Amino acid sequence: MIGCGSVSTRRDIRILSLQILCEVDTAGHDSEMVLAKAKHDYQMLSKDEEFVCNLVDNVLVNLQQLDNMIMSYAPSWPIRQMPVVDRNILRMAIGEIEWVSGTPKKVVVNEAVEIAKIFGSERSPSFINGVLGSFLTEKLELKA
Image (tube, rainbow, N blue to C red):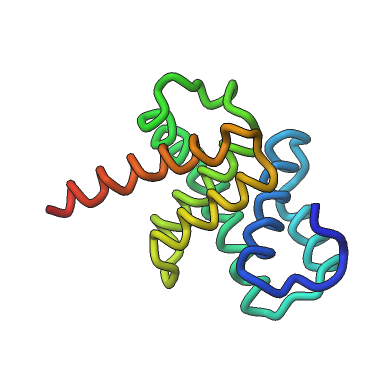
């Protein structure tokens, strides 16, 4: 977990968003309260606060759709049997690709893989990369 203090990079913001999502997912805490605590505990620019809120809100508002998407790209892994970190990294990355503009898709995938290296298991980075790669490949095929 990032300690209290300053959050200065997009990766820090994504990590904080992941921590919020994992807390809401595992402990069932109210997302608004968890977000308010994060805003209180971390020094963030307003644009960074907005980015955290966008990432978290996109996942929570679109949770069922995101889980369905993940299950279609990882059919061997029921969503509730997937490690909590992996499923929330995937939710956050797919949500960012789908509904948060401004970041290139490859950057989102790379960030998700790097965060999986830090917080996931040994297999998490390749799993995350595979699911997101399949998602993006299908997305590109649908555009063609």
